[in-house]
Length: 230
Image (cartoon, helix red, strand yellow):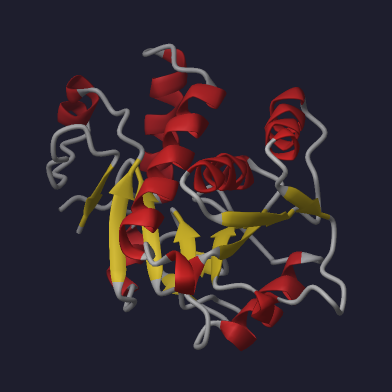
């Protein structure tokens, strides 16, 4: 199976935008749908996994999380979005509005009466493959709080576990150790260090010609499924 470096992942994204004429919101919709579909395939017991907290960052990974939350709602879950640092762009404002119109709560902060431990699943949509550098506030504290519950509540990371180096994997005390990761397009190099229970590939939008150009060797999707288990 192929693994992508940070630069390869960025190059493939740019080709999808520039050469294949995909828009950001198209890819985000497909990515978020594949994540919600993968989650519902494993955590399908609504008696145990009804309440989901989607922790969304300010970039594209957070946008994937907003889409994922909307589809989880359509699949019968009760998602809440924790969106501490909103991005004031039309695309993200529209995604927030779509969630609000579906009666999904969007929280700027978690108060004492609304804790991580109140949820059955936590979706980590904070940092994607473009992240570099120091983890700043409010995310440094958020990751510390998520670390406290990761042994009790399943954490599902979208594309890259937050706090990980995209290529070398976990490299500090606040690096999450999720139970599940849904890699988008293809796994990033850091996933060689993943020791959780479930690994999926989603984001079924890469044309065959682009797979051949980058020599991508990936598991085959089945039928009309939006994800494949690795």
